[in-house]
Image (tube, rainbow, N blue to C red; front, side, top):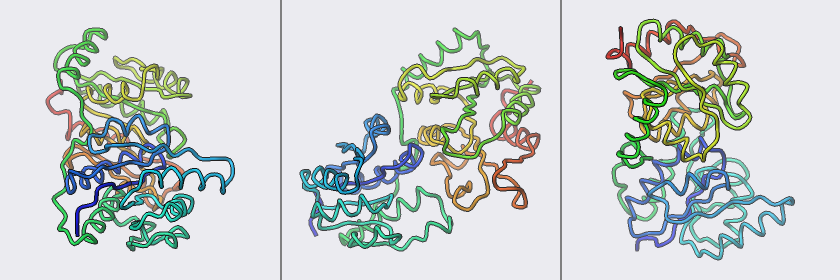
Length: 344
């Protein structure tokens, strides 16, 4: 079979979900370097799609007020691009119907929900069991499509999936250290206490206990970040942290925020979009997850190298709506794994 020329790869839900699709975009572009790879994404993740070197074009998914108007507009937008194939990493009925109406001949996606009726190449995944990371489920769909073409899938691309000019990042780090009077041989640790409403999270007391424990035995400087609507959360956490730190409010673009993450030594947060940006940058991450099956640390594992990710979950017998973690144990693990060269 001839190589496809135009492929639409869809991940049109939240920021964290989209970041977990980057290994898939990397794989399909590596497999078919001459093909035009288009991403269908909502407007608020489009700026990140622009940073992905494996995406050639972007289609903005703008939802309309009515279902009929919605799929009519989306299907026309897709049809105008004349794609050879579509791969739905995230399956929903409105998108699947739009692909069908657009007349795309090869429509790949998970064999799940009503949406599968409008796809003609379906892969059984049973994602609800959460037996593997989300990014691996995504990659499985890409490999399935490649095999449908009678081709052997190439090897996956290794992290980082998102990167910036090293000289720029070094300059930004030097500026931060100068502006905040951070001594050399000090670890810069970013704490993002907000969730954007997408995940169960630690309490501010948990984060403060962790930060204060780490700073007792290691040379560290904390950067507390606040996204839109999270200013008070960051200020309240700041009051609880005893060691040197400052709050970085959301003033620039999301790309500026990515560059901030890129300059730190360790990133700490709950399971939310910025965590998966850190993973794509291959930064050392510390993530806290609930044990609810659909939200476990395995299912929402970051895409960074295995030696650059630490994950903690609540006890299986605990209330899944709470995050009850031994912060002293977490502190010791973080210090032993990431911070030995910064100890006093």
